[in-house]
Amino acid sequence: MRTALPATSLAAALLCGASGALAAQPTQADLIRMLEKLNQRVEKLEQRNAELERELRDSRAQQQQAAPAAAIEQRVQALEQQQDRIAKGLESDTISENEPDLTNRLKTIEMQSHSMLTAARKVEALSGISAGLSLSTVMQKPFGVTGANSQLNYRGDAFITLPLARIGDVEQRLFTQFRIGQGTGLNGLASYSKPNATAFRVLGLDPDNSVAVLAQAWYQASIPLPFGGYKPRSRETLEVNFGKMDPFVFFDQNAAANDETRQFLNTAFVHNPLLDAGGDIGVDANGFAPGFRLSYVNTAGKPQTWRLSLGVFGAGPQGANYQHSLAAPLVLLQAETEQRMLGGLAGTYRVYAWNNPRASHFDAGVTELERHSGWGISADQRVGDGITLFGRYGQQLQGHARFDRALTLGAEFNGSYWSRGADNLGLAAGVLRSSGDYRSFAGAGNAEQVAEVYYRYRISKQFELSPSLQYIGRPGGDNTAAAIKILGLRAQLSY
Image 1 (cartoon, rainbow, N blue to C red):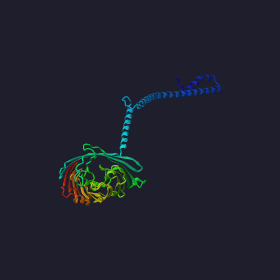
Image 2 (image 1 turned 45 degrees about the horizontal axis):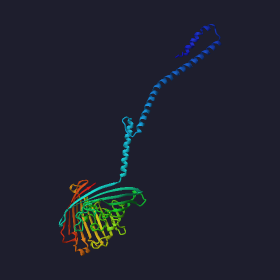
Image 3 (image 1 turned 30 degrees about the vertical axis):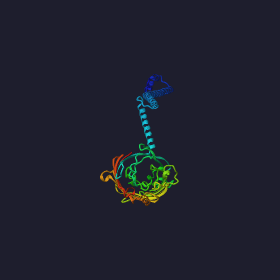
Image 4 (image 1 turned 90 degrees about the vertical axis):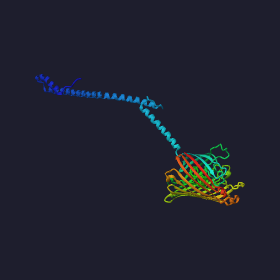
């Protein structure tokens, strides 16, 4: 590569070379021409020198850029190959150890997300569904009854509540219950009250056989009022039920005396004796009936609330078992309120009336159905942290019944007072007064006396044992009959 000479050195050389010509004394015009040529050559040399310097800089820059460009191209090629492997791996549903780590991670996360989404959908589908199982086994031994033997029976219940899709603000649900059992207990004793409310057996079957029956299947809609209003601010609700029901689920309830599987066994303390033991409820042989119910609930003064309920149910030998229409139904009307008394302790008070045009005469020889009507009260009130008092009263207004008035009183004590918070002690006593017509017909005495004490001992959350003792004085209103004592043991399994 050529190197440009400095302009000053070139000019000096030219001047020296021309010294010989000066001796020849050139003219001024010759000197001017020589200087012009000299300037032209200097300019060309400077331009060439600048071009060479530029070429040198460009060559160095290209050399510096050549190495990074090659490295970047190699990295790009490697990334493209890796991307191709990832894309091919994602096309397969299986996970392979030969695939890139990123592919394995993406597939694992996708599978986990799918599993979680599937589980979430199942939970969403089952949201609001409730179900349960109950098995009650009772052994009872009577004392004071000639020829009576010990009895053993069982009853199983399975129920499920299914929420239905809302219609606007209207909530809907479907309730179903199946029941199975064997043994009639000691309910054949000659007494007004029945000592074993858990006994269940489908009539007409051999005692060796038992079948499950659809006990209840009813629909409920809860409609906030006023209709079409703003639900979060609604303090009124209209409930509508229809289907096959147990009327006692909606009427004559009581916090301390309502469940024969965990509380009192005698029917006199489970429901109003006139409706249950007396038969005015008019249900079928299994204890259920078709019908519908309307209920208005007002919670504007919560925690003090009130409710009005109207029930219309099939009644009688045919009306309750779907062989007749609801042309002559049992009609129940109930008003109830929850109040806070005794320093804010909760209590519920119910008053109701009934009319059954398909009831039976106490004389089996009278086959014609007749009208029975009456009214009753059911109340429960807490008087302490673990004490609940209850009472029921019923009075017959029309019809020929064996007893026409009934009064039951009692209390339930929580085991927290003796360091057994899950246990309960129940005490109850009652009087069932014989009707004047029945006293004249059968020569019955004034009244039957009933008492019961039980202790519910919790072994676990699902298993409870309840020993009990019952006393029935003047059974069936017979003043000459010996008192009946019944020792019982109930085992209750619940899930």
